Amino acid sequence: MSDNEVAPKRKTRVKPKLERPRLYKVILVNDDYTPRDFVVMVLKAIFRMSEEAGYRVMMTAHKLGTSVVVVCARDIAETKAKEATDLGKEAGFPLMFTTEPEE
Ligand code: TYC
Image 1 (cartoon, rainbow, N blue to C red):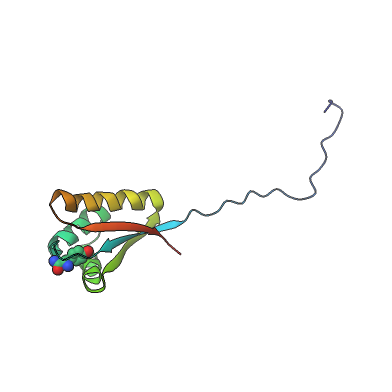
Image 2 (image 1 turned 135 degrees about the horizontal axis):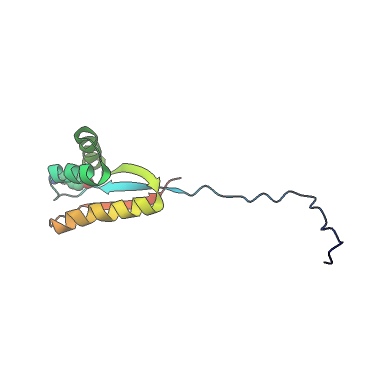
């Protein structure tokens, strides 16, 4: 385009559509071996839960099989799930935290 030409005006607006990033659930999975106190300790240490909140989440997983611990950004969910699972592994327990996208 030479200097004295004018760029044609757009007829439609270009609006960049930024999808909101999906949130992820960290899920605590029950097992028959990890002591209850240890599960609560991990919930307090990794997820900054109070004793009461940790106990409630632990008992929900104990009774129902799984319990949602927290909902957050994917990278944080995956990092925390791994840190928490690793604490169990280091202590010789099969404690498991998984992640899944929220609906
Ligand atoms: N079921 C375990 C027990 O009876 C306790 C436990 C609860 C383990 C929740 C894991 O995600 C869990 N010792």
